[in-house]
Image (cartoon, rainbow, N blue to C red; front, side, top):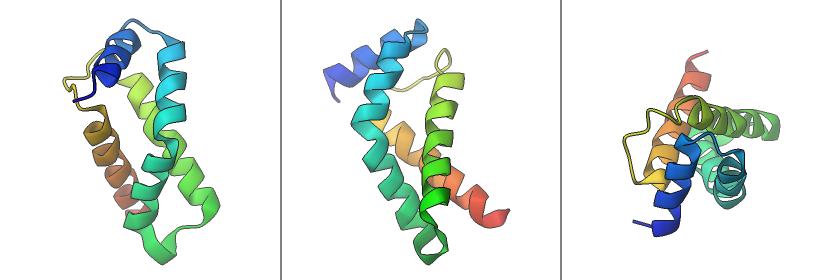
Length: 89
């Protein structure tokens, strides 16, 4: 468990937008890869970008309720859920 991620989660819970920016910078490629791997040939670049943005919006919206210290895992699970939701719609 990254101590940097723990600290970013703590700052995020305090409405720190700089922490969100750091998380986005650190994890955008990772989240996009998870989404692309879920969607495969069904993913356009635009879809992947939109769903990636949705993951970070969800993170911000849930910042005060996060019950995890494993940011990477939370982001991956949320990315997979976004991709699955996209396939259903």
